[in-house]
Length: 322
Ligand code: NDP
Image (tube, rainbow, N blue to C red; front, side, top):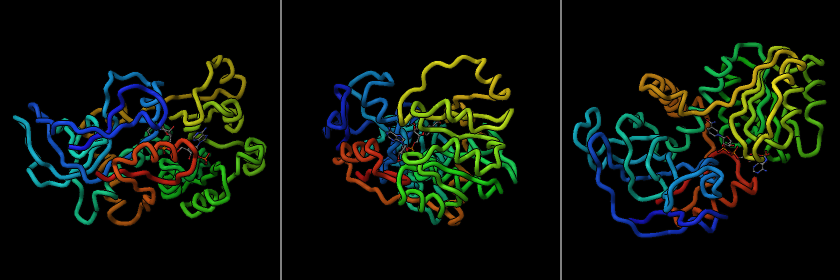
């Protein structure tokens, strides 16, 4: 089978197309013939060596496809089922294994592309809005990188709850997309002082919660956007890692909460996985959650997909097709 492998960490060119044997499912595992692969920023961190992994590595954890074979002891799935997961072991490939506990069935009416586009970023948006800071009607959220994959979905989920959403984006085109997703205001943080803008837009009060996936660039600014006892949910670092922070800063800025959440801890039980995946896939199938998956690359063009993601050229979801 065709697969992408990282033999040495580095730039996008570290993603090489190779031929590998089709893996065989061990007990509890399922072999999936992949139809659509979700690309996520975490694979960039692994490729660069910022996150450590044993090499050679076939990256990727998100995909949708058809069940090809079942390992011993697997129940609840049958050969031919259309399934999706964020727990695949190397999804940048034509076939990959996943623990059965990490798979969900794709509902009728949803294509593999849509399922792969919805799972990881959709469940991330779901846990941020329902669990990390359970948003309430009438609250205001600031979402950074509002036209990104998570950003567009989180904006839709937050506005669906009845919250007001302010976003930051780098270009006019991204601002329009962000507004279409439901943001009431999209601030061009590459041109404007977003802290001053957020203060102005909230009458000096600040927002209830900041959902930040960008990280380093203006970390302190993000704390200054919050109302007293508000929360900064720092869930990514696409702009670089955040330097250490003295906890007293949280006190002096208004008894703030700071958390660094990760999806794995919010889908740790089968019940939570089914809740979040069930909601997200259903909303996607019903058209309630609009998925933007216009960046589709062939598996062999994985390097170009990574380069475009890192160069901030993409909006919404990036998919690879074997
Ligand atoms: P995005 O589609 O949001 O892409 C990244 C965006 O970040 C860019 O489009 C860009 O938007 C913005 N950005 C700002 N500064 C930079 C920079 N220096 N280099 C690159 N991009 C920059 O990606 P995803 O939706 O896949 O992921 C968003 C973030 O969320 C990532 O950091 C990822 O690791 C994290 N994440 C965390 C999860 C968790 O559970 N903790 C789960 C899923 C994702 P703009 O041009 O508008 O600034």
